[in-house]
Image 1 (cartoon, rainbow, N blue to C red):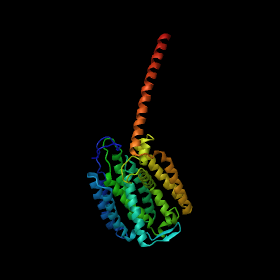
Image 2: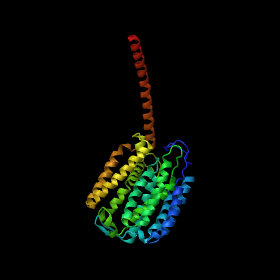
Image 3: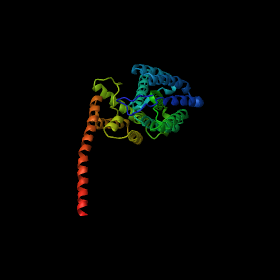
Image 4: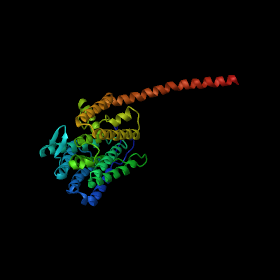
Amino acid sequence: MDDPNNRSSHSSKTPTLGGVSFYYTLIFVLFFINGRDTMNEAIYIIPGLTILFMVGLKDDLVVISPGAKLIAQVCAVAFILVNPSFTIHSFNGFLNIYEIPYYLYLIIAGFIMVTIINSYNLIDGIDGLASVVGIVILVIYTTIFYTTGEYFFALLSISLNACLLAFFGFNISSERKIFMGDTGSLVVGFVISILTLKFLALTPDAYVGLPFLLENAPLIAISILIVPLFDTARVFAIRIANKKGPFSPDRNHTHHVLIDFWGLSHKQASFIIGCFNLVFVVLFIVLGSKAENLGMVIFLISAIIILGYVFFKYNYNFTTLKQKIMLRRKVGKIKSSMEKPKKEKFKVAKNNKNSDSE
C-alpha cells in the first residue's frame, strides 16, 4: 500500500502492485507468440522483463536506491542489445549519417533504452497519465509494426495495450483505485524501449509502407515519446539548477504544473497530455512525409523551446511551490470571508425593500 505524503496526489492508502498483472500477462502472451518471432526475440525479452519485474516489485515493497535500479536496467537492456534483430546498422541518411559501427550502436541503443525506461517511470505521477500516454504510444507502434509485417511486435504491442486499458479503469476509479507502481512502469517502459529500438532497426524495405521518409525515422520515434522525454529533460534541468540530484523527488513535473497551478483534475490533465502526444505524432508524420530531416530537427527544437518557455515560470523547488499553494488557499479564504458580509447586507437590504413595498 502507498501511504500518502506531502508530495502525494492521493489522500488514502492505495495498492501499488497493479504492474504485477502486466508481467504475468506478457509472459503468458510471449509463450503463445514465440513462434512468430524471426530471431528468438521472445527468449531475450523474458530475462530482461523478469529482472525489471523483480526490481520494481522490491521497490514497491521496500524502496531501493536509484543506483540499484539503474544497474538492473543496464542488465535488462544487455539481453536485448545482444540480439541481432535489434541491431541498428544505419541511420539511413539522418543528418547525413549512414553506417555506424557496432560499438557505437551499443552505446546509442543502451542510452536510448535506459532513457525511455526512466522517462516512462517518471511520468507515473497522477491517475491515468501513464496509462493514457502508454496507450497512445502502443497504438502507434501497433500500427507501424502491422504495416511493416512485424507481427510479433504488433501482437506484443496489442497485448500490453490491453493490460493498460484494463488497468486504466481501476486507476481512475474512486472506490477501486490501484497504482501500477514501479513494477508496472518499469515493465511498460522496458517494452516501449524494445519497440522503439526495433522500429529504428527496421530494414529500409520495411519503411516502404510507412507514410514518412526513411531518414526521418529517428525524429518520428522522438515525437512518439515526446511526453516522457520532454518531462524528464525539464525536471532534470530544474533539479540540477536547484542543486539537487536528478532523481530527487519533487512536484515539478508537467502534470503537477497542470494540477497545482492550472487547477486541472487528474483526468483532465491526463487527457490533455495524451491528446497533445497524439497530435504531436500525427503532425510529425505529416511533416516527415515530405520535409527533410534538417528542417524537422529545427522544428522539433523550436517546439521544445516553446514548451520550455511556457512552463519556465513554473520552475520552483518544492518549498517555494508549497508556500505558493498555501498562499493561494489563504487568499481564497480571505476573499470568501469578505464576500459573506456583502451577501448578507444585500439580503437584508432586499428583505427591507420587499417589506416596504408590502
